Image (cartoon, rainbow, N blue to C red; front, side, top):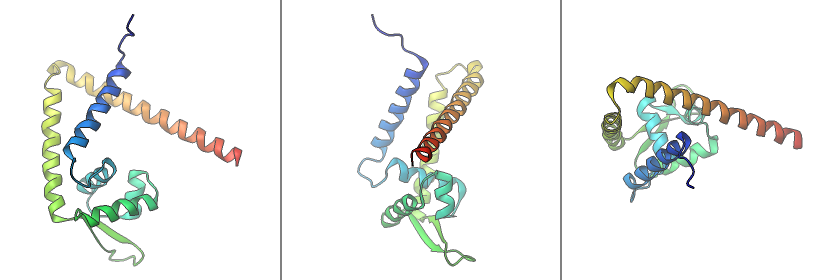
Length: 157
């Protein structure tokens, strides 16, 4: 007898489908999900220091340096000196990347409309509340697990 498909099964499937779609969209480019996430952050938050980007993306300073190095080499971002902190560098979208990110934002809006278009209008608010609640709870569970592992690591050290 086949196991019943659960909401979690569907959420995992959706995650996989988004990953496949992103891989297809960036095939043949140097963009990875992590690099794209950094570009998305710059698109929405504007130019930023590498330190601030690392904090917002929850990655190490070393990791952000690698991401920015690769994006700069590909012509997606520029670095410039911070106006008041000579130790800091400002990272900004390059002109061509700004155009690409505007197009990505437009495609994002279209996909949102396409996906929500299959949900009855009367059900959309409940769907959004449900997805928000699931995401919030999953963030809590992940944070608790990370804290538990960090505590376990400290005790074992």
